[in-house]
Structures are given as C-alpha cells and as structure tokens.
Image (cartoon, rainbow, N blue to C red; front, side, top):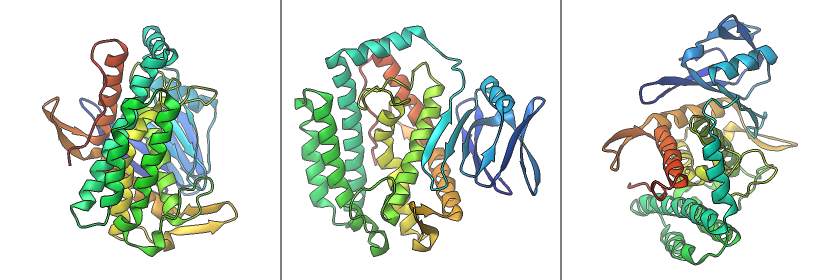
Length: 346
C-alpha cells in the first residue's frame, strides 16, 4: 500500500500482523489522541498504530517527546538513517520484556572467556556456512566461484582451533575477503565491480548497496531482539563496550549472506538497480530515493517469503527465522539446549 512519500510494508508473523513503516519524504510525525499521523506539504496521513511494529525514517522528519512517549507505550521501535542511507540511531522504547535473570545469564556468558568463545564461534560458523550456501548456489549455475568456495570451506574447519574472539574475528575477516572476491563472477557487470570493501563513504556502487543493506539488516535484527528477553547491548562476537548495541551485529552475520547479499545479486541481475540509480557527492556515493524504495520493497518481499523449517515442522518466514534464532540463543544461555546457528539448505 502506497501513500505519497510513505511505503507501508506488511510483515506477517505468527498470530500477529505487523507493518514496517518506511518514510522517505520530509514531514512531521505527530500523535493525535490514540493514533499517529504523518504530515507533509501534501496533507496528512494517519498511521494504523496497532498494526505497526517499527518505523524506518530516511527523509527529514520532525517529531516531539509526546510522539516518542506514545511509541514507547505501543512498543514501536523507530530507526533513522542519514540522507546517504547510513544507519544513524534508534529510539529503543522502554523494554516490556525486561528480564533480570536473562541479563545475568548474558553477562555470565560474556565474562567467562570459554562461554563467550563458544557462542561467538557458532556465529562465525553460521555466517561461514551460509556464505558457502550462497557460493554453492551460484557454482551450480556455472559461476566461477569454485576457488573462493574451497577457501571458505577450509577456513571454517579452523574455527574450533581458535582460542579467543580476536582469532575468530580474524578468520571471519578472511572468510569475507574470499567471499567478496566471488562477487564480480556472480554479478558479471563491470559497473558493479567490487574492487575492495569500503564503508563510510563507500567508494563504488556495489559497496553502497552492501552498506545500505547491512544497515537495514542491523535494524531488523534489533527490532526482533526487542521482542525477546535478550539485551541487545551484550553481544559475543562483537565486543561489548561503549557501543550501544552489539548483539544485533552478531545475529546479522548469520543472515546477511542469505538475505542481503542474495537480494543484491537479484536486484542487479534483474536490472532493477543500475548505475543511474546513484548520486555522487562530496560525502561519497548514495542511492537515489527510487532505488532505496525498490530495495526495501524487495527486502520486505524476501522477509515475508516462507521456507519449510525442518526442526519445527512447518513453514516460517525469513523474518521469523531471525526471532527463532534469538529464542535458540535464550535456551543456550539458560542451559536448556546448546546453540547451533541456522544454516540454509538451498
């Protein structure tokens, strides 16, 4: 459903239907009684509060304390991004599922070197094996990715030899280096040559897409953590320090290859995004609004896509997979069942 400057995206979950509200145009968000509305120079559009789970803001949008208080009451998370699509921050409402017990368990597993290493190793293993699944998919389609695939598979076998998280991070970095070398063979478009991984600012079109997609993935994982008893400030692969959130970065590593990267390959393969969809300015390269909307629409379609989950015996959406991953982590922290990461089977 489209409103002028607004893209409403429906996320269907078990028992509950929620929407992600993406705002690209400039305007103001307001509370009116027990509802919200977005106002622009073109008029006012009301937001169905009970059906909204999160808001992602890409335009220049103003709001006040009264608006934020209402978001907190309704347990709605707000993420905001810069003009270039960089993640800037989150209004993380007062947690309604706070658990002192879970925080203690998270802290215990972080402070104990071996406990932390056990969890962090599985995050890297999950990321590495899902990277392999992506490479195998394209290898079967005669893409020249055999060499990076073999390199990644060998690196995964060394994970159990790591004695600390720094060693794990080093292997994770090496896995990604080999993986990124396969991108040119997969995409097959010189306009989107990979060259090297660059971030703020990204130095080419492909890095711009990767950074934009990763920012969205971090935000989505953060929203899912909010719906559990976990505290997003305590991660295991990424060090818990003065950075506000780290657990969402950990969980994202598992899902970026099969959600974000596969989406990018699809967008480029179908010419849904071309070099004409980018602006080059003093702060680097950025996606034009049309391309951002295309990206989030296709991402939402991906998140709504269902797959057969062998362990639970029925189909679940990709977005639900993220929540299930968090539930598995909770069980591990409580000593009920050892955590193993989700690995794609296709």
